[in-house]
Picture 1 (tube, rainbow, N blue to C red):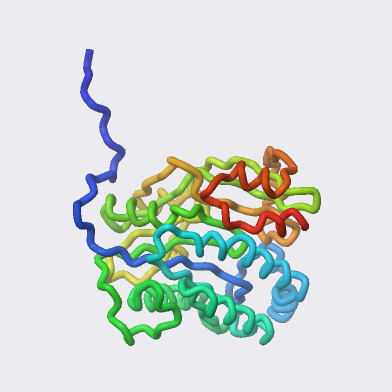
Picture 2 (picture 1 turned 60 degrees about the vertical axis):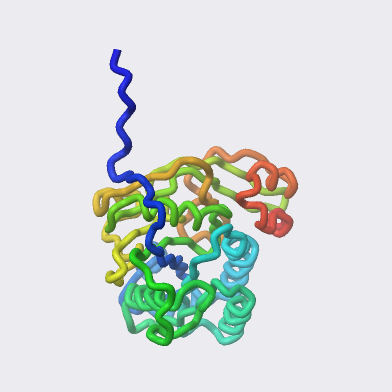
Length: 302
């Protein structure tokens, strides 16, 4: 009988004892618009002014901020590895009172850097510039201009995706850094295991999720000299392995994706096997400590 050890997955390397620093930046698109780019299916038959009116609708923005403050930001503030910056890219056309609210959140969270995107420019250029500035400045220096600080010096750069209504497990950045030094760049990282959550007035509903190429937490590892980001991957996120060698991590839930009436991707209509509803304490116990900081009380009042 052949008792040889099973082969390691392709691309998985032995961790080096003293890995070179990894610069990590998350990218979040928050109510951003570009004149020559369409981000939502509903925008196909709308003029630019109609798209702006829908995007900056008061009820929609109130819901997006509510989820940002109850789901996304608490999960990032709880990261066990604080060595990252979240680049929140919004529109320069966002109404002033909402701009002020974003600035207040950035003042409260040192990992958060807000970038205003000019709708006449290509969105990916703004995302590249924001990520490069954040990685060059280093964590905890959100808003520092590129070139004003040499930062920690990195051998690798890693960018990841997160939407304003989704969350990442408390150990996500730590796992991202651990995986990044084990693969040869350029390469992608896909976290396959997580949760779906539907807020509701009678309690939240939950559904386990195991899928390859989930957008939430999808990451791109590159050499430090590169300036593109995970949003530059030119295939759909579930086909990322067609563009880059991709390492998957399925060890434990890494993401939480919400489904709600204001969800731009219509996730609530995709036929998931929802469980619940759960009271806030039950939901928190089910999700475990990885998502303990989410505001379940607020999510159970929708």
